[in-house]
Image (cartoon, rainbow, N blue to C red; front, side):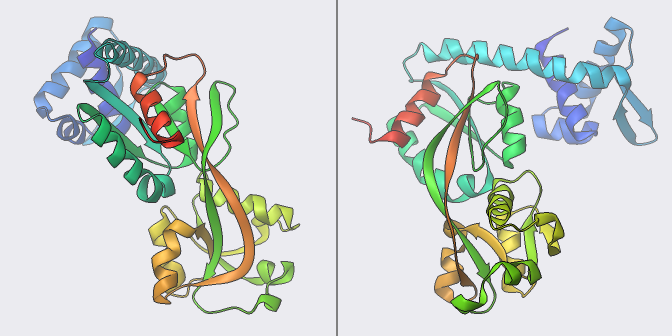
Length: 292
């Protein structure tokens, strides 16, 4: 069993498609098929069901997938540890961030990081808070930066920065109109379950004595931009970061509802027991204050 076989197996399992896995890893389809076949033949077990053009994990394949991920993550961590001895003169920094952070807050920080450490490659993954926590827990990345509290004893979590949340709608609203009854009666556009933005909104509503499950939700969408566009089109109201809606507020295509949601934290996430990458430490130092 080789690390390359594991890498190809994971790519096929995640995409459930040999051609898509080959394209993502920049190898030939035949190379992927051969690696999977060799792995199955070596251990005498089928890892995938092949029905027509479809491919699905067998029971053995499903059990093997987290083990394969763990082995590959440890090998990658070992490689990065050796790279770190070059004194941040080479290596890779793997970061995963939730959408608001990755799209609006983090890019200027990464630009500054590259200015200070130009030979460190930065790999940024973008997903929601729940999935980001999984990637940190499984050792797929060095550092996570998310928008909500994560309940996972394997992970250390601490505030890095703060963000302001706004209720927004397509038309102006008078301050006196917005009470608990108005919020219950409103039609909402929501981010998907697992996102930090949605968790922040639901926490705010519960503090007001409002059950989020009882709201009229017209759309559940997977990105800040799709939510913002839907609200602009009149689908309802929503809660979004001030970073996301600032241009639309300035242009008058959105209006802030006069209701304070307050601040929320952006949190750093790392595994409590895994090796601490010097590149990740350097990024955190940069966030905390200017490099001297």
